[in-house]
Amino acid sequence: MAKNKLVQYSVPLSNEPGALSKLTKTLAAEKINVTSFMSESLSDVAYFRFLAEESNNVKRLLEKSGYQAFETPAVDVELSNKPGELNRLAKALGEKGVNILNIYATANPGEYSGRVVLIVDQPEKAQPLLAKFSLNGGREVLTA
Image: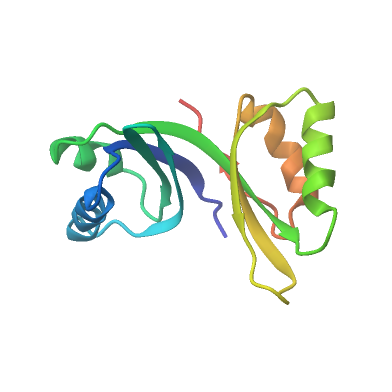
């Protein structure tokens, strides 16, 4: 099975009601399936960060629709859903000198594992380490 390359897209939005709805309407109209996401508000600007199932044309389609879009290589790992796993991962990355810039995750209560998405300063250095932690082998790093 071929490994997927992950890209996080960051789209700045006005921090106002309906801004996210307009963006997600655009994504839906372009048949872009969002597989993971987070949002953060910084005063008047909100950032919607997401991974998409098909990443080849996402930035171009967003820009064509009037949005700014930034691409960042991302890595992910499937970790056991138990206390201490995040600490173990963060410690291992820190010991290798890899800085975690952005992280988000989800796991359903009672399930064996959860998916963690990371934006790190040295994805190529992090990838072999993440593969050791991952229950599914992780994914390849997208390089420029």
